[in-house]
Image 1 (cartoon, rainbow, N blue to C red):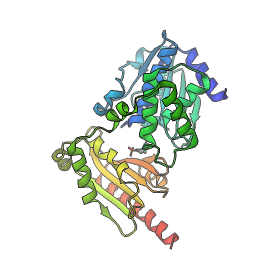
Image 2 (image 1 turned 90 degrees about the vertical axis):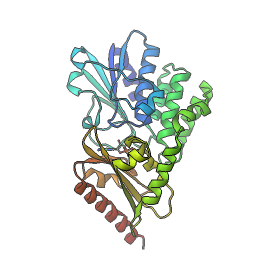
Image 3 (image 1 turned 120 degrees about the vertical axis):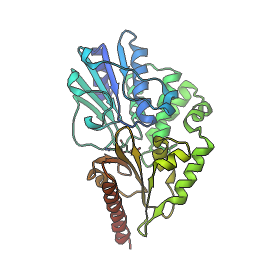
Image 4 (image 1 turned 30 degrees about the vertical axis):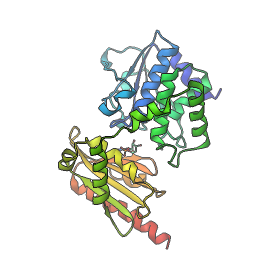
Length: 320
Ligand code: AMP
């Protein structure tokens, strides 16, 4: 058994109170990874108290319900963070409250922030890493847990389309599918169910995207439009994934205003052009080809968009 997996299992066995957190503004992989891990621990060690924390997102409720916990009452607790590289992006958990911390993540990050870290940038998703943990340690799971893990992998790899998809991704997904006889159509119903308004909103985005001569596409999604199409802002920003494989686009970005945080949320994607270093310069980060940022003003949004356009321009010039 690989030692990091063994060490994680050992720590899980050691603690009776475990909190599992993930990043703010969660996507299906973030929520599925924390809830699947909670279920796995409870399934194998029924006496343990396990809490999956953070703000819920109504459209991902089918993955399960999150817990509320007063951290000040916790004693001798273990914190596991999944799908998040830094503590300033963790939703609902404060590191100093915990005796031991573990990170399970697939984002690029050179900084070690937890006592134990399973970080693999080549992994398609946090759920893939947890699936690996299950198979390497022989932790028991059931069909419901396998379904969550499979959904996280499918969502984050965009149905095995993105570059982080590997033989290992397919192998582990196939094992989940075969070992637990998953109901794929039922799972996809939940993940991909859309209203006609949402599809119309997608058409609006395509029709209103500005594309520069350098192959950078951008759109500022306003509250008026979100209201008109009766979608929510997280739906709007998730749509950034649907613009892949457009010939004229090298990189693209959306901005929308996050009312709760009072910040502009930026979603950035590219087709093979590294963009996370640009995002990092603007209070953001993420993967090489899928990044994000949170900005205080529209001026900063414009500056980030200009920097991304410049990156596309440099790429165009280098390839001429
Ligand atoms: P999103 O567009 O929200 O799906 O985010 C794409 C990737 O960028 C995810 O891996 C996020 O964790 C990461 N990301 C988004 N916003 C930020 C931010 N403000 N700082 C660091 N990473 C971010």
